[in-house]
Length: 371
Ligand SMILES: Cc1cc2nc3c(=O)[nH]c(=O)nc-3n(C[C@H](O)[C@H](O)[C@H](O)COP(=O)(O)OP(=O)(O)OC[C@H]3O[C@@H](n4cnc5c(N)ncnc54)[C@H](O)[C@@H]3O)c2cc1C
Image (cartoon, rainbow, N blue to C red):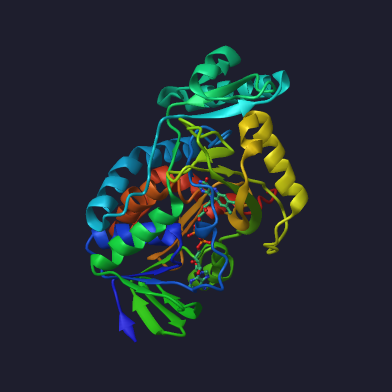
């Protein structure tokens, strides 16, 4: 049995960012990861560091997301300095393209409401008409009537990020243990024990960051994490000669020059198969946005499962029954990596979540009964 200061369960983007942050706080931390058989959103995502569509009707989520995008440059610089890995972060702003007047009007109304909800925090955005958009993006199709723009958006390489977080964590003395699925455990306040194929571990703090695995683990530690899978499919083209200067919600150019086309939102349970009709829809919309994309060969395609709460917002909690047990779940683990490593991890190390995270408690799902 190995005693540590903190156990983090799950070596995806959420767990790795938190483990890296906890190690940075000086905690002797072990990161336990199930391994290749697990569902891993962190290896199948689109790579946006995206703010503009986050927090409609939930301005606290917009603030948390924007805060994370603001932390990203420091995280990327820190990871590069520690590991030599370039996470390919670019934050030139981003656009959501509209393919009809109805889409444009809907988007304008949505962005205006987000600005109203943002209050004094503000929400810098513009609705851009086609003429101006032609100066911003090359080769738009005739169907594009305009776009929403915010300066907060960007993208990065999610695989480089995952590798950099793991390397920074282990090179700073953190213990990463793969093939260590947590199969059971026991809890008392500030006293946790987990069982894995690689042995048992104890610590006064535990962070459940096991993605879809959290749903089963949470009750053991006095937490509630009602996450479900939501499938997303992605296509990747060969390298393009055309340069896209900024990402859109569903089309971005990687540092290597390939174009990523994404990404569906499908309720398909744990079925990770690809669906050709959905892939066709993704390709068709991309070709309407940029007809030159239709000339490129698709070289890769995959599907992966998002980690989705009932209302689509993250869940962050500390157990009332077993203080020291935390849970962290979200469907935007690339975007939120800055906040997880640099804001959330220090809160966990200090033993309490900041009041700004109170709206993210899973208690919001508790059934309200009439008095
Ligand atoms: C198609 C698609 C597109 C996306 N696009 C974006 C995007 O553009 N921008 C963005 O910010 N986000 C995006 N996401 C979301 C992002 O990928 C996820 O939010 C993030 O990867 C979640 O990370 P995670 O660590 O919580 O989960 P996962 O990556 O699923 O990792 C969970 C880890 O927990 C481990 N595990 C599970 N159970 C156990 C157990 N019992 N014991 C030990 N370990 C366990 C697994 O081995 C796994 O490594 C996208 C997701 C998908 C699917």
